[in-house]
Every structure is written in C-alpha cells, then in structure tokens.
Image (cartoon, rainbow, N blue to C red; front, side, top):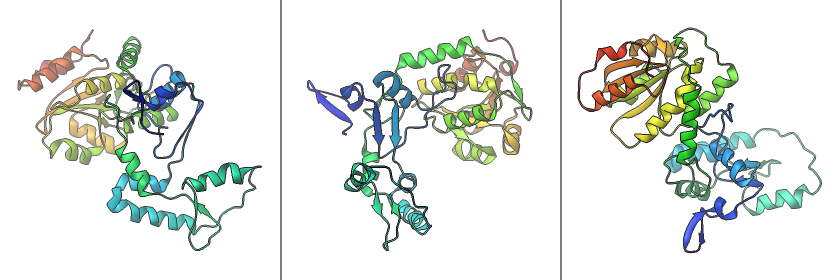
Length: 331
C-alpha cells in the first residue's frame, strides 16, 4: 500500500481513500504505543489505533516489525546490520519447540509470508524459521512521508486534529486538582498507571525527556539552552493530569527558541536531579536561560498566569520575578 492515493487530482492518505476496513497489517513499523492519555482511554495507548477504530472501524492492527528490524531502525545502516545479524544468529542457534500447525497453515499463511519475503529459513539448514531484516524495509520506513501535523505519524494513517487536542485540553482543565506530591513521598498512581505514563512520555515528540543530573547536563547545561523543565513524579496524579496541557503548550511553541522538557524526580536518581534543580515538591516548572537556572514556578494547575509571565520574562531578557515562586491561585 502506498502512502497516498490519487483521487480527482488530489492525493489523500490511504486510510481515507479506503474508508472502512477491519484489519491492518503493518510490516515496517509498530503503532502500538502512542502519546495520548484521555478520559475516554485512561489506560493510554496509541492515538493512531484509537483513530483507526473510531474513523475506519479497524479493530485489528498487527505489526510484524521484528527485533532485527528495530535494531537496524535504531542504529542505522552503518552500525545496525552487524548487531541485527548477531541477534539473528543467536536466535537461530537456539533449540525450538515443535508446534502443530493449524489446518491450512502452510498454503494460506506460511507460503504467503515466504512469497513476500517476510519469513525465511535460517542458515545451515537449521529447522528454524527466522524473520530478519532487509534494507528495503529500512528505506521504506525511513523514506515514508510524515503527516504535516508534526506528530511524526506516517502519512496515510489517521492523526489527531486540532479540535481533538482542544477537547483533551478542556477535559484536563475541568478535572484539574491542585494536590502536589513531595519528592520522596508516595502518590496515588498504581503500577499500571505508572507504566502507562512512562510509555506516554517516551513517545512524546514535543517534550524532551531528562533523566538524572547527567541528562540535565547533556540536554540543557552543556548546550546552553533556554527552556522550561516540567518536574514530575510517576506517582503524582496531578502531574499526570497536567501532562497533556504541558504537551499542548510545547506543541504550540514547537520550532521556537525554547526547549520544553520533562524531568522525572522518582527514585534516587530523580531525587538527586530534584536537588540539583532546587525542587522539593512536584509538579514544578524550572526555567533555564542559556544553560543556567533562571527561576522556578510551583503550580498544580495549567494554564498558569505565573508560569506564562515567567516564560515571557525569560524570552524578553528580563530578570526573574521571585514573586512568581510563591504559590497562589492561578485562576
């Protein structure tokens, strides 16, 4: 399937050109993870999969992306192939457990995979079938055009529209709470919610993730960058609630001079980072100017008039107004 389809002299994405379909097999990427956590989908997950279901009635998404393909994708064509081949060799050398195939598995499934170079036999006549990687897959994924929304989603797949983000923004506003979590204390999120938030952060294209003091030095200090760091904890429900709004703020300012980042203050590494940033409770927002700490605003609510003023002062070259550090109602 090509990214776009010509219709009436216009190019539209393949999903829109098809309309409704019940299944999608993805051979070059994996859309199982995403950046959107909403009231309708509190467990998180991929916004692409949500939209495939709601807009196209596609309830079955299967990715055939392998570990070998992922290695080449991550490390590139210079360093990836060697690592991928070593991985495949280690897999091929393992003993396999025989499986009884289902009726018609050979001609209806396995043969089709062979014919499309998705599955092939291991070397040295070993009784294993190993799906590896191909340079064609790498270039197809790399050269596939991205949607103009800036989310990094491949063109042809459904993406969140502005009105969708605005609706998430309104939901977050109405459910905002001002409860803050002291660094080192326990919050109200369970393990599943913590794992969900971790996946959300890892896939966020607009917010840089900072891990530990070394991450702060690498991303902000040594590069002498200016920006805003959202200091949060995995156990902080308030941090989770304002995360989408912070992402929206970063998205609206994408391409500007300020970097928007998120720092995790969880655990020993996080505590050390919190101490370095001068933060004792989350959520907090620490601002940097040219790699040097500019000031901090502590608030459990976004939008925040105090944070907005701090950002304006930072951009305009003004000194930090220490009155903005005082916690007060931002309503």
